[in-house]
Length: 190
Image (cartoon, rainbow, N blue to C red):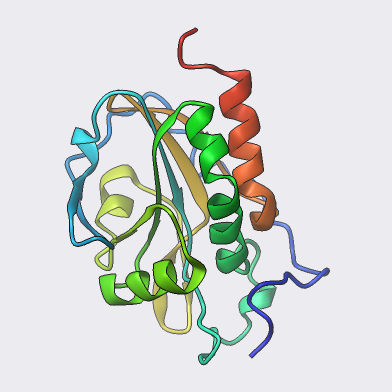
């Protein structure tokens, strides 16, 4: 197992294939997802203000293997480093107007709870093992290791509507900083 906390220098860069162009302006769908604190999070009832939902393929574990060829799939590698970047900039994201921050993948709740504990994340992770959000919003996915996984993207949902989308996301270990810059450049009170 390679180091999950560092990205290889030669990762392929994902290209924008237009798979997220339809999302800005869409209403958040009625999808209920289990959060790592045992709560149910309903996406069309997040409340007022901005919610940041970063969506990623899967987080590896130090004692496990990633799917074969993982580093060769554009945009696949980097879920742990992305989570750590959101952890390290969480306070700044909130100060810049993110009322809520969530990570979301198709991994089950038990897996997500382990990630929150191991990485000391100050926000909840959401589990969508049935890829319901992908079905409701036609989100991009890919196949690896016999699994269908989310492509990495981030939704900014404001007052129940997708306000902005980051897609593709690269490099993942700097993505929270990209979101932070966007929040600062686009204050909610404008």
